[in-house]
Length: 294
Image (cartoon, rainbow, N blue to C red; front, side, top):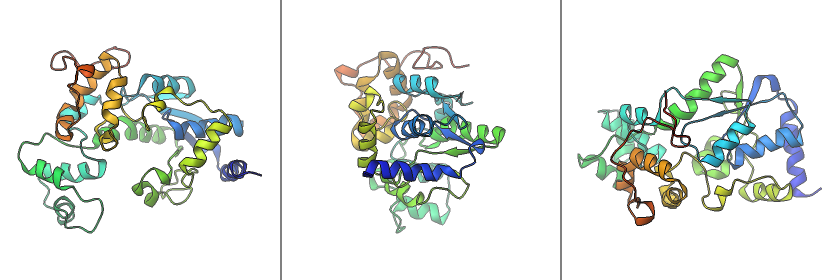
């Protein structure tokens, strides 16, 4: 038995005692959740586990098409991207840094928040000097990581409350230091199922190749497929790559949505290839289909 088959058999054993009627697959259309989709449907031949996704209005078209094709249920968030920006602020530096920045901008004086913001905490989650100087300059725009909460997490939580089901998540520890620290077993404290927590990038790629699991073409250009143009991809220079892949309608939408953060991070959205008139127009529409967001 080779390494791939050994892993798949081990993964099968992790599902063996799972009460499938009490769980659903949280499906994003990305590599990890799609591998779980393939494993459930093609390897286990299971039709009990419900496949659930969210149309956040911010997916790449190829990923959105996957969600609509493969999901039993497609959820919609109650808040729209520009409503979240207006009420809470925009993503900018990183989720962990923006968490503390939002508290500071809202006037928090809690010692634990101040320690992280001013870098006196021993944690590696401290706010960077660049981010801190920008916030203290008095010229900072409203910053918040809450877009993910309202576009993705809350729709799933509301579904779980209605259905009584828990999520199966395609989260892997190899994705980041934070995830490696958070996900060390197959179950979280709140009983979410994370069977891929110890799956390496190399083994996942090998499984994809051996079984010829379909990979969206967009992965030929960018490593991960979150919300279109999200500033959190800037540390890997992903934003410019993403902007170049979008159509005019999508590009105009995300530049308007993230412009202030792009300016701070030095993301070049004004070059000839990406040039568009993003200061005018109505942005209460879906960047993918062009329909008004009711």
